[in-house]
Image 1 (tube, rainbow, N blue to C red):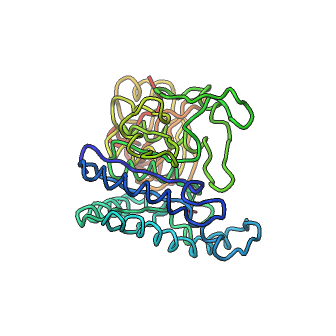
Image 2: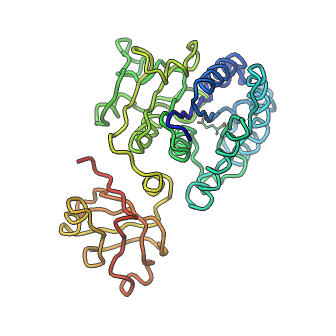
Image 3: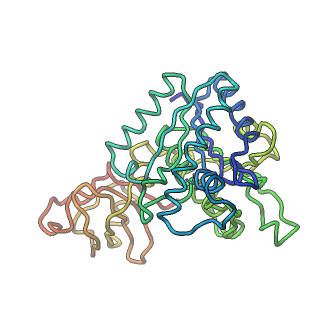
Length: 356
Ligand code: GLU
């Protein structure tokens, strides 16, 4: 993708109105901003939520929203085409076509599948079609679902090598406190580091319909900024929200600035996309070798390990205190740990995760 590329995620509370139906006005606003940005040379991928809510508005007949996974998955299957129809209409107003891409966590875990998804999104761009992504809710197993599209959007930003991630939602951004409880809450305009106060400000706030809330937006911003992606949380219903967000407009939304050294696409994939299959606990000597001398992890440095990992699987690497130090792809399976190669995790397959 070009150096200026943005993944914009529109949350359920913004995609749908209070009846649960798709809010065509919001979609029209996002679509016209997307088209304007594309004319300015940006690449844009849309991540949409709202399939379950729109689906229940269609078939629920006013009953309370169901909770069981099988019904919710079926409801998403009703809502997803309604959602795509609405996005198609919104973009058609600006003479632009859309394509649907549904992704599940496994698509991010398998490197081959991951590269395939990236190829499809790139091919859509080459056809001048805007990719509209959602989680494959109808199929993805409850146990392994993302469940919220904030994380999905951060992974997509990483997948396409985006420069920006914009999370459009129903608040002005990240506030110092929950405004429903504390009316002195003010907007945090800029974030350069993730600390305890920030996590406290995010609390566990949720809107009625979305599944993410501020905590999941913060987790997404954390992941994206580590991968070198500038992240903005901004109000979806503001006029030209997407444009204002990518233009870094003072007083508009919360901007999270990326770490200066961007992880390579492959290392971000190891750090954030692929699920860990076990844990290696390393001794202090190995910790020093990894963190201060850029070495590979050798078997002698591993104090203990857990999990049924296979060769090539991702594992967490922890210090003796239990703190996560790194994540990497392991070269030996748990079964043959004692007699495999001396290098357990090669430095090229290792991502250090502590801020130093
Ligand atoms: N994938 C879900 C849907 O389209 C949305 C999850 C979320 O609220 O972020 O209904």
